[in-house]
Length: 492
Image 1: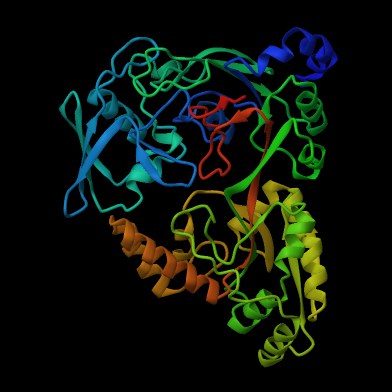
Image 2 (image 1 turned 180 degrees about the vertical axis):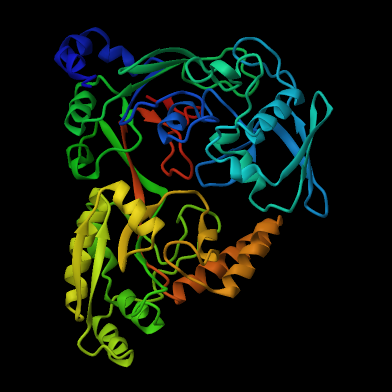
């Protein structure tokens, strides 16, 4: 597929015809790397679906903002029972779906009954299993009864997997999506683009944009040419190795933020010598995080010291827990019985950040006596050997699920960390609703796993957007999948 080649060939004519006026218009053209396989986020796992539809076509009872915080969505407010088992949502009035049908509590019940049905294909169905019942109180009020308290319930309601759909149109949402959002689906030219237009009867504040076109451009060089020619107004995540073309160009703005991708040196804690805390501490001291970021992400990764996204309100900066100190690393290795170091394998999945990081870390570890054999793998093999069979010493991978610190409470997870204190804290966190208390517990867990050096905490994958300098309102961070259009607008 080469979508933009004909666009690039016509660039000069297009600019002469529309270029000067475009910046004054209320339309935007966004280049994205992947075409979605379908357009229903409740029936598919592909991130590319949410990039187009999340908070644009479809909305949930809550929504996630660009810092990862929960905000009201189709529900204007909610009440939580003292035992944390009953949530009562008050819905906004006057909302319609894009086909003109009305939205009310029956649509909410239909949506979650569909998610939890035995034949459900929802990719995150397990997140909603605490829901025991959804009861319609009246057209504007819906009650959720949970089987157990769930501290992430409101966040999970704001995911793309939980957007509200209507029984009249749900079966066709894969190809003709109909939601309640500020933009309505117009057309999908497969292999090329999806076009959205502002939904004029939208219940909330009207967006500035009247039209948005998502162009599917997988090749970096082609996207670069399309941006420079003015055929595309921006992209949410551009290849960092090619950003230099735009950084000093006044016609563009480069927005560098963070994603939910915690990139770690995954460590088999259940296997010697990594079961020894001193060995893990030594490896942590041997990591020059900035050198890895410079070499593997062209300087755009955000350093992390624990397994948590830096943009999140609960984030605690623990990058100083084990500062780069090769001498301290050697001393800890000697204390652990490895004065001459040891040999290990480093299994690398087929992504650039992992392969590049692996080469740099091998060099850094060699300086303290740890000799790494780099083993490159395809994803299927990595999933089987590392994630499934735990047949590895070390690996490098980015964990991209939002708020996934709970994996450290699972002793059967691939890195084999078994800490009863973390398991108890995670259980409490999952059952805690109070935001202040949730933050305190999450930060305590972050601190414990940092001090235990469970994994080597490297960097958060960056979101590197390139946009026309006259555009504003784009998300700098990506706490959840999506290119949210509601605040994007042209400025003089």
